[in-house]
Image (cartoon, each protein chain N blue to C red):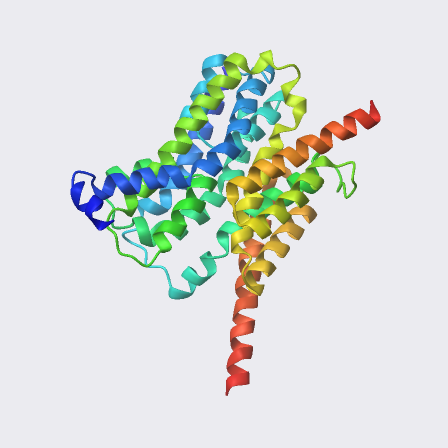
Length: 110
Length: 248
Protein backbone atom coordinates (compact mmCIF):
# COMPACT_ATOMS: atom_id res chain seq x y z
CA UNK A 1 0.00 0.00 0.00
CA UNK A 2 1.55 3.28 -1.19
CA UNK A 3 0.10 5.24 1.71
CA UNK A 4 2.15 3.33 4.30
CA UNK A 5 5.40 3.90 2.40
CA UNK A 6 4.58 7.58 2.02
CA UNK A 7 3.89 8.06 5.75
CA UNK A 8 6.90 6.04 6.93
CA UNK A 9 9.25 7.58 4.35
CA UNK A 10 8.12 11.13 5.11
CA UNK A 11 8.31 10.54 8.86
CA UNK A 12 11.85 9.14 8.63
CA UNK A 13 13.34 11.86 6.41
CA UNK A 14 11.63 14.62 8.36
CA UNK A 15 12.85 13.34 11.72
CA UNK A 16 16.33 12.73 10.31
CA UNK A 17 16.57 16.35 9.15
CA UNK A 18 15.23 17.72 12.43
CA UNK A 19 17.33 15.54 14.72
CA UNK A 20 20.66 14.94 12.91
CA UNK A 21 22.21 18.23 14.02
CA UNK A 22 21.12 17.77 17.63
CA UNK A 23 22.53 14.25 17.60
CA UNK A 24 26.03 15.40 16.68
CA UNK A 25 25.86 18.67 18.65
CA UNK A 26 28.43 17.37 21.16
CA UNK A 27 31.08 16.85 18.49
CA UNK A 28 30.75 20.03 16.47
CA UNK A 29 31.83 23.54 17.31
CA UNK A 30 30.28 26.25 15.15
CA UNK A 31 32.61 29.07 14.09
CA UNK A 32 31.63 32.47 15.50
CA UNK A 33 30.67 33.94 12.12
CA UNK A 34 28.09 31.13 11.69
CA UNK A 35 25.98 32.52 14.52
CA UNK A 36 25.88 35.82 12.60
CA UNK A 37 24.97 34.05 9.36
CA UNK A 38 22.23 32.01 11.02
CA UNK A 39 20.34 35.10 12.17
CA UNK A 40 19.15 35.45 8.57
CA UNK A 41 17.69 31.94 8.45
CA UNK A 42 14.16 32.57 9.78
CA UNK A 43 13.23 35.59 7.59
CA UNK A 44 14.90 34.12 4.48
CA UNK A 45 13.17 30.74 4.78
CA UNK A 46 9.75 32.20 5.58
CA UNK A 47 10.02 34.66 2.68
CA UNK A 48 11.08 31.91 0.26
CA UNK A 49 7.86 30.05 1.13
CA UNK A 50 5.58 33.10 1.27
CA UNK A 51 6.45 35.10 -1.86
CA UNK A 52 5.59 32.39 -4.43
CA UNK A 53 2.48 31.42 -2.44
CA UNK A 54 1.22 35.01 -2.68
CA UNK A 55 2.41 36.07 -6.15
CA UNK A 56 1.93 32.70 -7.91
CA UNK A 57 -1.10 31.22 -6.15
CA UNK A 58 -1.79 28.90 -9.06
CA UNK A 59 1.86 27.93 -9.46
CA UNK A 60 2.11 28.91 -13.10
CA UNK A 61 2.83 32.61 -13.51
CA UNK A 62 3.24 35.74 -11.42
CA UNK A 63 -0.20 37.31 -10.87
CA UNK A 64 0.44 40.98 -10.08
CA UNK A 65 -3.19 42.06 -10.48
CA UNK A 66 -6.11 43.05 -8.31
CA UNK A 67 -7.74 39.79 -9.46
CA UNK A 68 -5.32 38.01 -7.13
CA UNK A 69 -6.88 37.99 -3.63
CA UNK A 70 -3.68 36.44 -2.20
CA UNK A 71 -1.79 39.59 -3.22
CA UNK A 72 -4.43 41.93 -1.75
CA UNK A 73 -4.58 39.96 1.51
CA UNK A 74 -0.78 39.93 1.75
CA UNK A 75 -0.50 43.71 1.17
CA UNK A 76 -3.10 44.35 3.88
CA UNK A 77 -1.27 41.97 6.24
CA UNK A 78 2.05 43.74 5.55
CA UNK A 79 0.51 47.12 6.35
CA UNK A 80 -1.20 45.89 9.53
CA UNK A 81 1.92 44.03 10.66
CA UNK A 82 4.19 46.98 10.00
CA UNK A 83 2.11 49.52 11.91
CA UNK A 84 0.58 47.39 14.66
CA UNK A 85 3.46 44.96 15.36
CA UNK A 86 0.73 42.60 16.54
CA UNK A 87 0.96 39.08 15.11
CA UNK A 88 -2.57 37.93 15.91
CA UNK A 89 -4.10 41.12 14.51
CA UNK A 90 -1.98 40.76 11.35
CA UNK A 91 -3.18 37.20 10.75
CA UNK A 92 -6.85 37.91 11.45
CA UNK A 93 -7.11 41.16 9.46
CA UNK A 94 -5.05 39.71 6.59
CA UNK A 95 -7.28 36.65 6.43
CA UNK A 96 -10.46 38.76 6.54
CA UNK A 97 -9.11 41.06 3.79
CA UNK A 98 -8.27 38.03 1.66
CA UNK A 99 -11.67 36.36 2.13
CA UNK A 100 -13.49 39.68 1.65
CA UNK A 101 -11.65 40.49 -1.57
CA UNK A 102 -12.22 36.97 -2.85
CA UNK A 103 -15.93 37.35 -2.11
CA UNK A 104 -16.07 40.70 -3.94
CA UNK A 105 -14.33 39.13 -6.96
CA UNK A 106 -16.82 36.25 -6.99
CA UNK A 107 -19.76 38.66 -6.85
CA UNK A 108 -18.21 40.72 -9.64
CA UNK A 109 -17.53 37.79 -11.92
CA UNK A 110 -20.55 35.72 -11.04
CA UNK B 1 2.36 43.65 44.35
CA UNK B 2 5.41 41.57 45.18
CA UNK B 3 3.52 39.96 48.04
CA UNK B 4 1.32 37.93 45.69
CA UNK B 5 4.39 36.29 44.22
CA UNK B 6 5.67 35.39 47.66
CA UNK B 7 2.32 33.90 48.56
CA UNK B 8 2.45 31.45 45.66
CA UNK B 9 5.67 29.52 46.07
CA UNK B 10 4.07 26.39 44.59
CA UNK B 11 4.13 27.68 41.00
CA UNK B 12 7.41 26.38 39.65
CA UNK B 13 9.41 28.48 37.17
CA UNK B 14 9.39 25.52 34.77
CA UNK B 15 5.60 25.58 34.72
CA UNK B 16 5.53 29.33 34.16
CA UNK B 17 7.90 28.93 31.19
CA UNK B 18 5.80 26.05 29.80
CA UNK B 19 2.57 28.04 29.96
CA UNK B 20 4.22 31.19 28.57
CA UNK B 21 5.56 29.16 25.64
CA UNK B 22 2.05 27.91 24.95
CA UNK B 23 0.57 31.41 25.28
CA UNK B 24 3.13 33.01 22.97
CA UNK B 25 2.29 30.39 20.32
CA UNK B 26 -1.45 31.20 20.25
CA UNK B 27 -1.31 33.60 17.26
CA UNK B 28 0.50 30.93 15.24
CA UNK B 29 -2.05 28.33 16.29
CA UNK B 30 -4.79 30.61 14.95
CA UNK B 31 -2.89 30.74 11.66
CA UNK B 32 -2.32 26.97 11.55
CA UNK B 33 -5.94 26.01 12.31
CA UNK B 34 -7.50 26.65 8.88
CA UNK B 35 -4.46 25.01 7.33
CA UNK B 36 -4.85 21.85 9.41
CA UNK B 37 -8.58 21.61 8.83
CA UNK B 38 -8.23 21.95 5.09
CA UNK B 39 -5.44 19.36 5.11
CA UNK B 40 -7.75 16.84 6.78
CA UNK B 41 -10.52 17.68 4.34
CA UNK B 42 -8.38 17.43 1.21
CA UNK B 43 -6.58 14.25 2.27
CA UNK B 44 -9.56 11.99 1.68
CA UNK B 45 -10.20 13.34 -1.82
CA UNK B 46 -6.48 12.98 -2.66
CA UNK B 47 -6.63 9.25 -2.05
CA UNK B 48 -5.55 9.02 1.56
CA UNK B 49 -7.44 6.89 4.08
CA UNK B 50 -8.82 8.19 7.38
CA UNK B 51 -6.15 6.46 9.47
CA UNK B 52 -3.38 7.22 6.97
CA UNK B 53 -4.17 10.91 7.26
CA UNK B 54 -4.15 10.82 11.06
CA UNK B 55 -0.88 8.85 10.99
CA UNK B 56 0.70 11.39 8.64
CA UNK B 57 -0.15 14.30 10.95
CA UNK B 58 0.92 12.34 14.03
CA UNK B 59 4.23 10.95 12.75
CA UNK B 60 5.37 13.40 10.07
CA UNK B 61 4.03 16.63 11.58
CA UNK B 62 5.17 18.98 8.80
CA UNK B 63 2.34 21.08 7.41
CA UNK B 64 3.69 22.31 4.09
CA UNK B 65 5.33 18.95 3.26
CA UNK B 66 2.05 17.15 4.05
CA UNK B 67 0.20 19.48 1.70
CA UNK B 68 2.71 18.99 -1.09
CA UNK B 69 2.49 15.21 -0.58
CA UNK B 70 -1.28 15.36 -1.12
CA UNK B 71 -0.80 17.32 -4.32
CA UNK B 72 1.79 14.85 -5.60
CA UNK B 73 -0.32 11.85 -4.67
CA UNK B 74 -3.34 13.33 -6.41
CA UNK B 75 -1.39 13.53 -9.69
CA UNK B 76 -0.14 9.96 -9.27
CA UNK B 77 3.47 10.52 -8.16
CA UNK B 78 5.28 7.48 -6.77
CA UNK B 79 6.19 7.28 -3.08
CA UNK B 80 9.97 7.75 -3.57
CA UNK B 81 9.29 11.05 -5.36
CA UNK B 82 7.03 12.16 -2.50
CA UNK B 83 9.68 11.25 0.08
CA UNK B 84 12.41 13.01 -1.92
CA UNK B 85 10.30 16.16 -2.22
CA UNK B 86 9.59 16.03 1.53
CA UNK B 87 13.33 15.89 2.10
CA UNK B 88 13.97 19.01 0.02
CA UNK B 89 11.02 20.96 1.42
CA UNK B 90 12.00 20.14 5.01
CA UNK B 91 15.72 20.83 4.54
CA UNK B 92 15.00 24.26 5.97
CA UNK B 93 14.58 22.55 9.34
CA UNK B 94 18.28 21.72 9.15
CA UNK B 95 18.96 25.45 9.17
CA UNK B 96 16.62 25.85 12.14
CA UNK B 97 18.31 22.98 14.00
CA UNK B 98 21.76 24.51 13.43
CA UNK B 99 20.47 27.84 14.73
CA UNK B 100 19.12 26.14 17.87
CA UNK B 101 22.30 24.13 18.47
CA UNK B 102 23.92 26.39 21.04
CA UNK B 103 20.72 26.32 23.09
CA UNK B 104 19.95 22.60 23.02
CA UNK B 105 23.39 20.98 22.92
CA UNK B 106 23.58 20.76 26.72
CA UNK B 107 20.15 19.10 26.97
CA UNK B 108 19.91 15.33 27.55
CA UNK B 109 18.69 13.11 24.73
CA UNK B 110 15.27 12.63 26.28
CA UNK B 111 14.76 16.37 25.67
CA UNK B 112 16.55 16.65 22.34
CA UNK B 113 14.59 13.89 20.60
CA UNK B 114 11.06 15.21 21.26
CA UNK B 115 12.12 18.84 20.71
CA UNK B 116 13.63 17.81 17.36
CA UNK B 117 10.54 15.83 16.36
CA UNK B 118 8.32 18.82 17.17
CA UNK B 119 10.45 21.38 15.32
CA UNK B 120 8.29 23.56 13.06
CA UNK B 121 8.57 26.99 11.46
CA UNK B 122 6.21 28.37 14.06
CA UNK B 123 7.78 26.91 17.19
CA UNK B 124 11.25 27.80 15.93
CA UNK B 125 10.25 31.42 15.36
CA UNK B 126 8.72 31.68 18.84
CA UNK B 127 11.40 29.89 20.87
CA UNK B 128 14.48 31.42 19.21
CA UNK B 129 13.31 34.77 20.59
CA UNK B 130 13.06 33.32 24.10
CA UNK B 131 16.45 31.61 23.84
CA UNK B 132 18.03 34.85 22.63
CA UNK B 133 16.81 36.83 25.62
CA UNK B 134 19.78 37.72 27.83
CA UNK B 135 18.55 36.09 31.06
CA UNK B 136 20.16 32.75 31.87
CA UNK B 137 17.03 30.94 33.04
CA UNK B 138 17.67 27.18 33.09
CA UNK B 139 13.98 26.60 32.28
CA UNK B 140 13.90 27.90 28.71
CA UNK B 141 13.57 24.28 27.54
CA UNK B 142 10.13 24.24 29.17
CA UNK B 143 9.11 27.29 27.14
CA UNK B 144 10.24 25.40 24.03
CA UNK B 145 8.29 22.31 25.08
CA UNK B 146 5.14 24.35 25.75
CA UNK B 147 5.23 25.95 22.31
CA UNK B 148 5.97 22.61 20.57
CA UNK B 149 3.21 20.70 22.35
CA UNK B 150 0.66 23.43 21.67
CA UNK B 151 1.43 23.32 17.94
CA UNK B 152 1.38 19.52 17.89
CA UNK B 153 -1.95 19.13 19.70
CA UNK B 154 -3.53 21.81 17.52
CA UNK B 155 -2.35 20.07 14.34
CA UNK B 156 -3.79 16.71 15.45
CA UNK B 157 -7.13 18.23 16.44
CA UNK B 158 -7.44 20.23 13.22
CA UNK B 159 -6.55 17.24 11.04
CA UNK B 160 -9.24 15.24 12.85
CA UNK B 161 -11.78 18.05 12.42
CA UNK B 162 -11.00 18.27 8.71
CA UNK B 163 -11.44 14.52 8.32
CA UNK B 164 -14.71 14.35 10.22
CA UNK B 165 -16.62 17.59 9.68
CA UNK B 166 -14.59 19.20 6.86
CA UNK B 167 -16.83 17.83 4.13
CA UNK B 168 -19.93 19.37 5.72
CA UNK B 169 -18.69 22.77 4.51
CA UNK B 170 -19.54 22.94 0.82
CA UNK B 171 -16.49 23.27 -1.38
CA UNK B 172 -14.20 24.20 1.53
CA UNK B 173 -11.11 23.55 -0.60
CA UNK B 174 -12.05 26.46 -2.87
CA UNK B 175 -12.35 28.99 -0.04
CA UNK B 176 -8.64 29.72 -0.23
CA UNK B 177 -7.94 28.84 3.40
CA UNK B 178 -4.43 27.94 2.28
CA UNK B 179 -3.82 31.69 2.53
CA UNK B 180 -3.59 31.12 6.30
CA UNK B 181 0.03 30.00 6.01
CA UNK B 182 1.42 32.90 3.96
CA UNK B 183 -0.45 35.44 6.10
CA UNK B 184 0.97 33.88 9.28
CA UNK B 185 4.46 33.92 7.83
CA UNK B 186 4.11 37.59 6.81
CA UNK B 187 3.33 38.39 10.43
CA UNK B 188 6.43 36.44 11.48
CA UNK B 189 8.76 38.08 8.91
CA UNK B 190 7.92 41.74 9.60
CA UNK B 191 9.55 42.00 13.07
CA UNK B 192 12.87 40.98 11.50
CA UNK B 193 12.89 43.93 9.08
CA UNK B 194 14.86 46.28 11.32
CA UNK B 195 17.95 46.95 9.19
CA UNK B 196 19.29 46.83 5.65
CA UNK B 197 20.92 43.37 5.83
CA UNK B 198 17.58 41.86 6.92
CA UNK B 199 15.78 43.66 4.09
CA UNK B 200 18.39 42.37 1.67
CA UNK B 201 17.94 38.79 2.94
CA UNK B 202 14.17 39.00 2.45
CA UNK B 203 14.25 40.69 -0.96
CA UNK B 204 16.85 38.23 -2.28
CA UNK B 205 15.07 35.17 -0.86
CA UNK B 206 11.75 36.32 -2.36
CA UNK B 207 13.21 37.09 -5.79
CA UNK B 208 15.16 33.85 -6.05
CA UNK B 209 12.10 31.89 -4.90
CA UNK B 210 10.08 33.38 -7.77
CA UNK B 211 12.85 32.85 -10.32
CA UNK B 212 13.47 29.22 -9.34
CA UNK B 213 9.86 28.21 -8.68
CA UNK B 214 9.68 25.89 -11.67
CA UNK B 215 12.62 23.74 -10.54
CA UNK B 216 11.58 20.16 -9.76
CA UNK B 217 10.93 18.84 -6.25
CA UNK B 218 10.63 22.34 -4.77
CA UNK B 219 14.42 22.74 -5.00
CA UNK B 220 13.90 26.49 -5.48
CA UNK B 221 12.79 26.82 -1.86
CA UNK B 222 16.09 25.78 -0.35
CA UNK B 223 18.09 27.67 -3.02
CA UNK B 224 16.14 30.85 -2.29
CA UNK B 225 16.59 30.45 1.46
CA UNK B 226 20.35 29.97 1.11
CA UNK B 227 20.65 32.93 -1.28
CA UNK B 228 18.76 35.14 1.21
CA UNK B 229 20.93 34.06 4.15
CA UNK B 230 24.20 34.57 2.27
CA UNK B 231 22.99 37.84 0.73
CA UNK B 232 21.94 39.28 4.09
CA UNK B 233 25.25 38.33 5.66
CA UNK B 234 27.23 39.84 2.78
CA UNK B 235 25.38 43.15 3.07
CA UNK B 236 26.07 43.11 6.80
CA UNK B 237 29.79 42.53 6.18
CA UNK B 238 29.86 45.23 3.53
CA UNK B 239 28.21 47.75 5.87
CA UNK B 240 30.54 46.88 8.77
CA UNK B 241 33.67 47.28 6.66
CA UNK B 242 32.34 50.58 5.28
CA UNK B 243 31.75 51.85 8.82
CA UNK B 244 35.27 50.88 9.80
CA UNK B 245 36.68 52.78 6.84
CA UNK B 246 34.66 55.88 7.74
CA UNK B 247 35.66 55.74 11.37
CA UNK B 248 39.39 55.34 10.75
